[in-house]
Image 1 (spheres, rainbow, N blue to C red):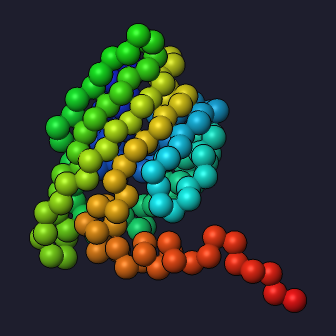
Image 2: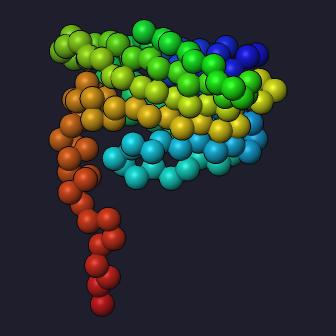
Image 3: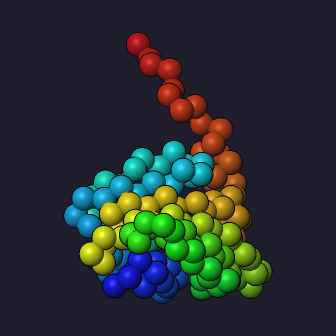
Length: 151
């Protein structure tokens, strides 16, 4: 698969909640980062880490929102393994019907049909708002990063 084909399988797989298939789009050793994540997400450096990541997110995502990737624009680079993909997750909250748009940009390196590196820039605040979880995000952000040790 070309880098664009792999990217499209990924974003449509996320929207379809095909979490079991998604890790297979990645190389055994990979480097996936979410630089704009307010959650302080660590890098995902293996297919097993991605399997765990998608598995942990599956229950949280069920039933909150329905969405599809839209406005997809894929930009080739001078490196044939690397693409820059701009898109929007567009959808609605299941409970309220309220619509939302979450802008995203992925910079991906795909080698031999597998993602070996990705930087996923997602508007996490917009996604938390869409899922009705903005309060949870704010509470998490207010928690101390390193709580003081107790004696």
